[in-house]
Amino acid sequence: MAASMASQAAARGLRTATSKRFLLDKRKGTCSTPRRWLNLQEYQSKKLMQESGVAVQRFYVADTASEALEAAKRLNAKEIVLKAQILAGGRGKGVFDSGLKGGVHLTKDPAVVGELANKMLGFNLTTKQTPKDGVKVKTVMVAEALDISRETYFAILMDRACNGPVMVGSPQGGVDIEEVAASSPELIFKEVIDILDGVQDEQALRMAANLGFKGPLQRQAADQIKRLYDLFLKVDATQVEVNPLGETPEGQVVCFDAKINFDDNAEFRQKAVFAMDDMTESDPTETEAAKWDLKYIGLDGNIACFVNGAGLAMATCDIIDLHGGKPANFLDLGGGVKERQVYEAFKLLTADPKVEAILVNIFGGIVNCAIIANGITKACRELELKVPLVVRLEAVTPGGAGGQLVVSLIVKIPW
Image (cartoon, rainbow, N blue to C red; front, top):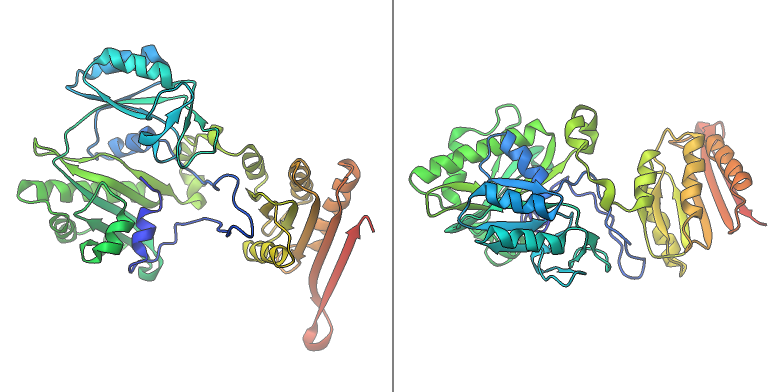
């Protein structure tokens, strides 16, 4: 399930503030890996849902083939689904370097689960969303496979236009919701939620009816919708997306898959949730940058960018592109930067073998340029900088016409 489904549907009338993507066209450079904030594995999201009373399939998690076999036996289900756990979509059509095709398999024989897990665990799975060498699978989820008689789409997301959360749903689920929004926009329904009052019974029932649930299933679906909203609030989510929210032949409403996005500013009160973050799939440079509160994205160019403020960082990438260059990274220092952060940023930039020059572009309106200058000189001395360095520091000081004087300093090293 694509993580962007709800935001793509929003293009038909919603505006979500949850997307934190850095977009560059092919001329400017492409991200070597996608920038990831908190991103949970499927089983972790389902665990959170279980804790909030949301109906999901019975499942176990295994790290070895023998554990997977034992889990399949304990489920005692008519049919079992085995899913490789990686932070990428398209698992079902992926390929392992063990030769196994598909990261999702169905079987009625528990013994087969052990055999399949043996070809998944410890091997790289390559999908359309992974790097070309794939991602090593360290965990598999063994779950009860349920028949689905009907699939719907449901999401709760923050909508800037409505100044709060909005429910988005469609009776056509199990497919890319952006395709539904493009071909049948009349099948996209939304309900604005009052952040103070929460989801009202009539809203939940109306959304359940719009999703096509009838009779007792309508009330059951409405209950699941309200529980999903409780989860949305409890974990400080910016989006909870369920595709499909399905109906079984036995008359159950079940969340068969889920994608939860979190507000990274709420980490201080969601420590248990953020502790589940699997950093093993993150780019090592991005992980190291995050330790120093630096916003870093690796790109495929050769000119490193060292900038404060996301807007200025993107403008700097544009300037490099305008003059025929290609940025090697997006690095935003932000405000309130310390000298040690400047030094650590230079360590990250100089460790990239693609970097042939470094461009520093700092606006002193939100940071003290003296701190930047001290950090740069320390880095140049201790790291024995070998590549050309261009530094632009611009500060606003008292005095001059109108009470302010703009001071610019441009230094080229070596000069």
